[in-house]
Image 1 (cartoon, rainbow, N blue to C red):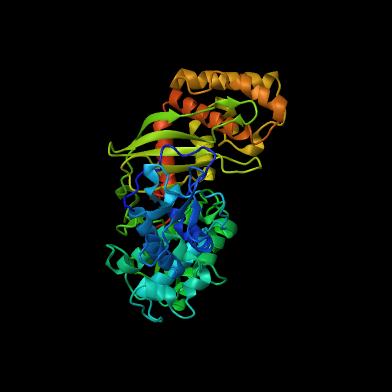
Image 2: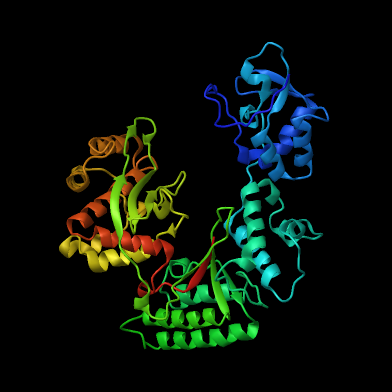
Amino acid sequence: MSRVRVPSIPPLHINSGMSTFSYDKVGQYGNEVVTYIEKNKGVIKANDGQKYTIAIDNKSTFNTFAKYVKTQNFIAAEKLVREKEFEVLEPDERKKKYVALGWTEIEKSVFSSKSIKIDTKQQEKITLLIIKNVLGDDTKTWKSFDEMFNAPNSNIKKIFPDLPKLTTWYDHFDLQFRQITGTPKFPNSSYGVYLYDDPGSFMDYISELVTEKLGLYSKKDSWDPADIWLVKSKDVQEKYTDKFDKILDKFTEGFYAKNKFRSIKEINAILKEAYFKKDIVGISLKKSNMKTLKYTEFNLQANVNDQKLPDVAFDSIDLDVSYDDKKGFISKTSYVNVMDNDKDSYKLAFKSNTGEKIGNITYEFLPSSNASAFLGKVPKDQLQRWLVEQIKLLGEDAANVYMPQGSKLTKTYNDKIKKSWVNKVDTIKKNFGDFTGLNDFVENLEKSYKDFGLSVKNASAMQMVDFTWILAKLQENKNLTKFLTLSYYFAQKKGQIYNFGPFGKLY
């Protein structure tokens, strides 16, 4: 007898030496698994280390699964193995559990399919093609995303041919295709120019203007996170770039010598006008929840003071600096937990962003409860400016206060440096209490320098402790709420008062 059941969580008896599939790997490994099972006439190893023969006849679950995989219908294949298991024929003597074999019970180690990842630019270009198809005035109209993807000479296939294997991303783009025109506030109009970041595009122009010619930001996204720009026509683009060029002339002639950010305020005002006229619309792209497409507008209020930005409330800090003699400091991520209007809770993750080289930790806001979406990365250069100009943490030494950086870490360890870390740990404990491994942090840090020198085994931990110390100093100076609120809105690039540009977020 065979049976069908709905798999739940992975079995508790999995051998620790075995590795198994998750459902989202059907697209990546499906072809290889089907080929292997067919070649071996149904024989496959399970996560208990035993080999089983599954049914592969025309009426079997495997046969249906194989058909889906061979036609690249990985969404249907994944749905199938979430609901059914492969019927086991042999051996006769087997545990009751293995009357059927689930996808998550197959031993993974014998397979080696290359990991499939879609990068940010590929995501943005596919969304741009979808918007062009739905809103553009110069393109063929497709009835569905499937039809658009599978068309002869499909431009989406040229960008990312393996898209069907990434089922959640395929669903994401399908949702965009179906819902863009019906999404409230989305700038539904007819656009004739859809340049991404090619030479001559508005993206190329505006990025160069704010980062190189005006030199106000280290990267464009620190001011406006729009990933794509919809432009009505080339003539419209030239009309607006002429206005921006005049601002640049005033900047270079010293008109803004006392307040260089007046130039970006003028640019933002012009872009707001362009947005409302649907002449130029900047859009930031985030992954959807696969159910409903949302569109939120940022920094488009008529007056700066009309944009309400309430404070967030500090909740707690999760810091772990536990130590292993061979691995060094184990944890690479810490969190500051905050509440937004007593409704949604978020966590500011400060974490390692490097592999084998020492780098800077990054800061980004993530949802931690019923909040709907990842908010974004915090632009460190903007927070650094605020730290130096306003916090005055150390009196005369305020200019030495900086967001932690790998390049600022000392290559050697001595008594003076040790004393500095002792003082920082004391300040943290005084304001926030103890954290995992904090009591032994200084001792373990000294040990790590003796064993590894300055390395990835201690660099992230030092930066995380350093940032927690900054938070503790802010707590002492009653500036913690202000700092976390700034970080919260900086991550979203929300706040005309902070000179962030106008954009809409599609997510």
